[in-house]
Amino acid sequence: MYGILSPECVMDNSPEGHTSFLREIPMNTRIHSDYSALDHPDIVQVVFHPRKSVSVSHTGGNIHEILISVDDDVVIGSRLYCPDGSAPTLLFFHGNGETVADYHEIGMMYNDAGINFWAVDYRGYGRSTGTSTCTSMMQDCQSIFEFVRDWRKEHLHLGPLIIMGRSLGSASALEVVWQYKNWTSGLIIESGVAHLLPVLQRLGVDTVRFGLTEREGFQNLEKIAHYPKPTLIIHAERDHIIPFTAGQALYDACLAHDRTFLKIPNANHNNLFLYGRTEYMAAVKHFTNSMTS
Image 1 (cartoon, rainbow, N blue to C red):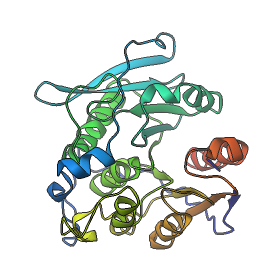
Image 2: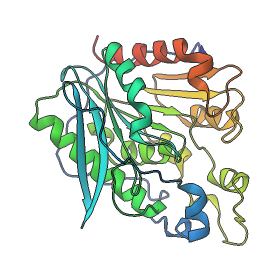
Image 3: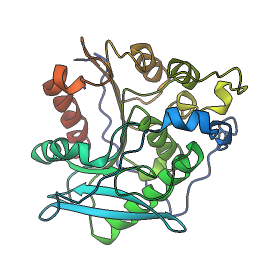
Image 4: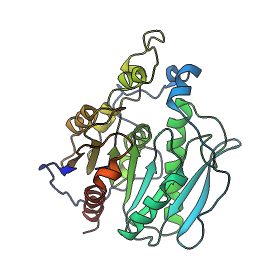
């Protein structure tokens, strides 16, 4: 996951905004919240690749397995790596073929860097129940955020809360910061989707058959354009699933004063850490440190 920092990196240490615990109402009516056009079984089967976790093997100490209720009889599995409640916390939405358990070593790595890491699954993944659709994913990320926000308040975890999404998880992350921008401190997008239709087509979906346009998609570009807080975009130079131009498009659409683009040279969608672990971790640590200095 990693490369070089863009020279445009102006740090803005303004404090996190505080409003109320009521969900914010989006002001931009061009952004819709109806994702039902993406819920056809032929689309769902290429968007989601659920894997179950048969056991809980990493708990105790600073690691907590937490089930989050998102609907009647539906819970989402999550894992929190948290040695210090006052440290910055990354709320992380992973890619479509991954699970929370895949991020154990990375969670420990973040802890070593002074960062808490809270990874969450989707319906049907890991320890989660239910079956994923695009609609449920976009609704669940809001319920997850509200749970995390309230849990942190109850446990006096007062450090910055940064929303992070990888690949498919970029849609959840951008939905969260669009809906709750005043309750978040920053945004990190890794291997993020800019335009959904080319990704679906690359995965074999006949978007013409379904009558899909970008209007029916996640509208990530529109959402990131309305997020004013510090933003870090990370993308592999040779990403074979979501091309590097998508990362550039997200960066260009971002209007935040403090924005950074990290390119991981020679890496593809699945080996960013292999090619750029040092740069990746340095960029994330610098990004989170800027919110506590």
